[in-house]
Image 1 (cartoon, rainbow, N blue to C red):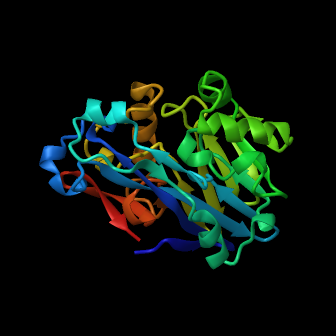
Image 2 (cartoon, rainbow, N blue to C red):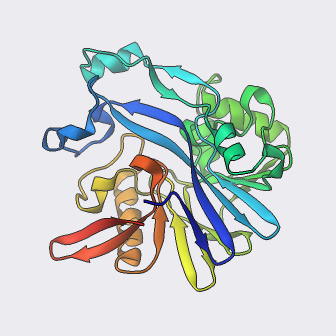
Length: 283
């Protein structure tokens, strides 16, 4: 199963910065009792913090920036609300992205653009850890609507607010609000709101081939067949569902590879029509 692919002259590589450990309440509508293998012994569901490296002639784009070099303790009040008997040490822990970039032959200075699908903390962590841009030569592109919705109202010490305000102070941010935004040759961001108001997905084309990076528009593999599953931090669950269904319908039975930030193993997937509906097919 592939975590790297070529689209014409563009290489796309999935990178993992760490993991989050989420209690079942984060997935309204998902019957974990019917899928017992999804839960770890501590009663949480582990998801990777995925990012995608997109490289072509003259550009190196990083799509999403992980959790960052932090470990976020599991909140006691959340453990109580979730009824967890064994509480994980952390709800999210990052830090692996620099090594993953190095293994791919990329240094932080090589990244020309950081494109954030949205501004949740597990997607922005390496933008400016400790107040300093980690990618010194990169412009940071994000959906403008997410600033007012997620950053401005957040507590002062909120991890996402901290790194994004540091990036704004450094003058590296480019907020966008157009339906389509060209990021690099063959790389186009498309506004796909619902999970957040400024959420974008990324289309990559070249040599007659096509791939898409869907961020959190599709958050869990079971959402392909169960439209009742949402995610706790969806800004508008109904809008998120409509966006998700539009995307999945567009890609069904097409030779289009899809990358999602939180799918197990970060393997690229296709969507195939089946007699019963739809199914994922790993690349």
